[in-house]
Length: 60
Image (cartoon, rainbow, N blue to C red; front, side):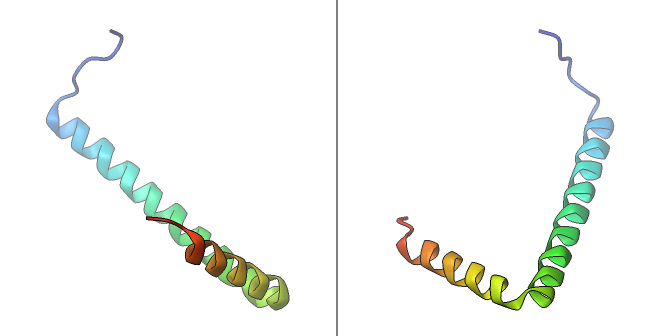
């Protein structure tokens, strides 16, 4: 195969960097959603209602 095992330290650093970038992305995404909710409250309210309906009809 084309992949070889990385040393533990390198793998941990890579995982930590990936988790840090993911956390940053999710934080910015949440900020963008909050901003959009403030700018367009009617659309945001409709989106919340749709999400609530999806969660009510979701089967576990």
